[in-house]
Length: 434
Image (cartoon, rainbow, N blue to C red; front, side):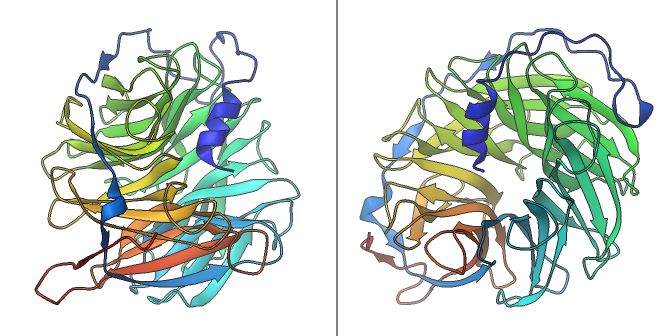
């Protein structure tokens, strides 16, 4: 399920009234709620970029994974053997309706092994990291295990994908995990949203565990409506930065929301960014200047129904610049990384360009966010990109899902994108074939 669609669905649910103090996972009491506070708004209007006049000369190599059902990859990482690991879900394999799914490939995307995790109901994985023992940790949500409707689910495996342990976190309502990082102390930080704890119908949720997944502390952040955190990074001061979307603060129906905490999860500041439309934050990196780059989609600015939106801030979340990229249709940036030259690479999907109903889309920018090249790929149906990582050759690996290719209605998709250099130096510009 696309997160933007899920967010829209979640806000239509009946509002959950303020909850009295509740018992959080593993018997630790929920932290006191944050007081309602004024968020500082972005006042810099984004610059728009319409990319149809230029594209990079690139090579694309794609692989699909799946069976006859619906299968998707939401996260990709580069592994210590220079291959890739993908996390997502499958209903072609496994025990239940949907199972969490881990795929391991070599550096060309050739399948080495795959594993499923789950019970009889719906279980999803959205984020993955490789651990110090060359195993893996995945975070997502489970309806098969835990206390509530959905619980946040953390799974730890060995190097071959065999499950070593798992932990659920949540209450009687829905609780979802979207992002996972390894922390400097060897533990994990997990983020997503919770309807079981906090103030509103959904709040940002930050969970800190030790290396065995035992809860050390958890915090919620939000107002009386709905907030969902899509990404978390540990910052250079050992605190945390969370990015996602808010309906409680800001100018529009939904705004990007950036929350900065100290090392124990106590909020230090927060900022909302957006206009009068719907703006969704999906991904976050701390940049080399200790600022932040946030990516997502905006209907407040840009050329189309939704455009890619890239926001660059200083270390306190003050907007330095922002850029939109897109055409007249739906264009959503789901993942951002900072490149070695301090530029950025954004991956997502476009309905403005390409071959089908939607195509995967990668945009490469310089340090100030000016687009250098872009490439769209896909078939005649629907193709989505959700996660990007740089590979050992300096190109990119992009994970997502496709209904244009593969065995089932949707298959997991991995694309290796390499910019072709030469012919006068730098990446050659050619007319956009779409």
